[in-house]
Amino acid sequence: MSSTAAQQAAAIRALIEAMKANRTVNYAAIGMTALITADYLHTLPREVQLMWPTKLSVPKVLFFLVRYYTFVHSMLSAWHHGAVALTGDAACYQPFAVDAYSCLVTHALCEAISYVRAYAFSGRNRYVLGFLVILFVSIHSVEFYILAKFVKTVRFATLPPPIQAGCVAIKGDNRALSLIFELILVSLATVTILMIATAWWRRRQSHGAEAGSLLKLFYRDGIFYFIFLSTLAVANIIFDHTAPSNGLQFTMVQCT
Image 1 (tube, one colour):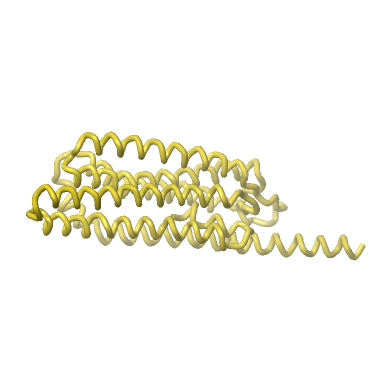
Image 2 (tube, one colour; image 1 turned 90 degrees about the horizontal axis):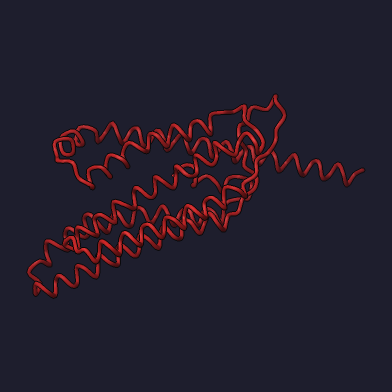
């Protein structure tokens, strides 16, 4: 009898910890939405001045997709985190999956900007374009495949009706989740190495004549963007491995 009571007490403690983790995830999602909104309002005047008058192009389309799809993702995330009456695998699978896929779409759009920048940096070399297209399609196909496998491993707590805690994730394959962000890091590193190689090759071809402008452009528009996105990917990998296995490890995939 004491053994059964101890097991029940342990299960209750685990559930409480999972609910606390779920609340942390929800707060993180709300915080990210607030940050995105503040950034949008702060930079909107410059967007109107610099981006709206320009001709339609691939970089412009990507810019607006990244800028405004984040609000679409925020609404999808709010649907997932705000539906406090949902509980259990059957009710929570769809909103969680939509949130997770939307997060990966956001990452893919951000990476696409790096790919376009690398192509432009190469002088619009068609061989570089072919390589980048193959790399982008290959890596992201694998990422979405792994995400599909990961989502199927996630399990949610089934709570009684009086407890309005929403979808509480209690189990999932962390390794698959980490692998997705490792692939993102590989993708970004490959594109950055390509830009470095392009800068070195063009410098040799021009005998240093283009070095100043090329390096300035590279460090301003390439390196810092790479560092920013890579930092997010590394943070995800670390979080997946170190966060408690009570649902808190899913914070980054839903909020980043």
